[in-house]
Image (cartoon, rainbow, N blue to C red; front, side, top):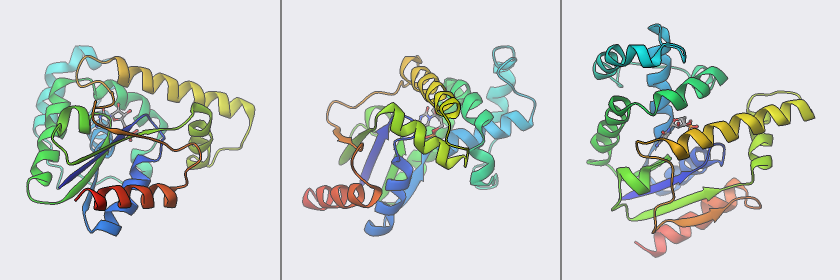
Length: 211
Ligand code: C5P
């Protein structure tokens, strides 16, 4: 069984997916982390926002030789701000999307999975049994990002996070390859007033009722 959880940046997709996976005894795949791992690998090999377009052939070669089983990066290193920025450029490259797609399908072919991302229900697994699309107001998302980064809560930092989130959303929504969009048959979950626990219970109930 495949449960797809898509949505904008910082809507709590992976936190909910992780908890739900434990409760259902499913494997959780955070597809954003695969894009981030590729991004850090490319960055360590000299790729930056300034040279992406000149290095597309090299990037394709480097990406094709990645083995996800052997590259290990800590969550902290993958969550760095420059990886978020560079990552939304890297995620537009067809060879990168193909690499992640191959990995998702490899794992999903032999496991029950909960996969969170941007295009899981719309593009990767259009036949997923359950599809959810998370929405949270931009201001709430910016507050979460401040907490995640352990920044001081100030108007300046809040505005920085709002800008960053809006720019990432815009790149994800407007890219040519597999843009972020709600699948027609996905259920929208507005999480403005729903805690992680409440969201997990809601999805657990819905997934089990429909089994
Ligand atoms: O989910 P997270 O913010 O960690 O994802 C990092 C980046 O990876 C996103 O900004 C997006 O550009 C890209 N991504 C994607 N498709 C997915 C998951 C993530 O393009 N399914």
